[in-house]
Image (cartoon, rainbow, N blue to C red; front, side):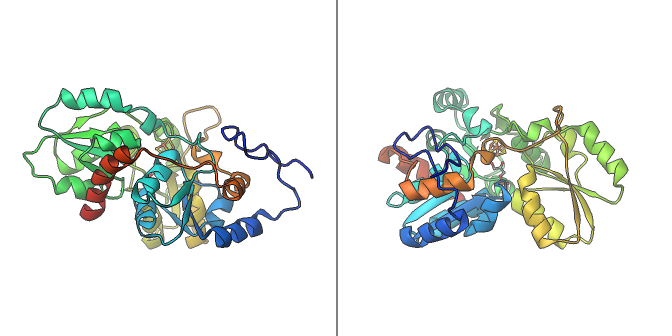
Length: 326
Ligand code: 13P
Ligand code: SF4
């Protein structure tokens, strides 16, 4: 048997080889049937994973899918907080994450102990947390939001009610500006969205004067001010589908461009360059997932997300509030 790829090092029980003769698309489809599994994938996943998934979506759509699935096993092609949210919503189902190391800089920026101290320093505030955080941080929150519903949910909070918004200060600042409403911001940021180069975006606009700029609200204001449309990944996708424009400069993780090209094959998409030398803006956490790891996690039913029941119940309340208010 030939060696294709080393399996997840975090799971020593997993065999480390895959037969190169295997057709992974067929094998994953077979395992989906055998396990009665659903494969959920975020828009930032590699194209092959998006193509084999049962559902591809943004954070809100994926949590809504997780909340209503009839499957016994949820395979999450995304990052840890997304799979953990699926487990919070489905305590009796098995939730598999192909690589447990697939984290998120926003979730890591907001450890629960430090966040609890921050909340204690701001008594009387409603705690609104972006879904990109750990279960322990969710458990300290009153309402969870995603980039797709943050504005709608904050609008529903009485105007005289002070708010803490965590952990993404850029999304928080964007909502504050949009609603003309102050909030206390936790100073977290997405390591992918803060490295886009304003200079290179302006240069791209000069080269493609007809192109519209579409950006995710995790970007900084210096980039957002150039945007013709700002929204979650699903909102950016809908915008390019509905817009009469033919060219777009896409200021978010470039994985979403796969769906944009599928929906609008005759339109042009230019990924916005980052400030780093290669100009690349891929999320290294999202890209940890591969077809090989998806196959292995289904075959071995590991790595699996597990959660303490008391923590799960505390983290569930603000997620259910979000689903009600969305
Ligand atoms: P959405 O897909 O919800 O817009 O989120 C983007 C993101 O960064 C997920 O980690
Ligand atoms: Fe986290 Fe940013 Fe990666 Fe999304 S793109 S998973 S927010 S690091």
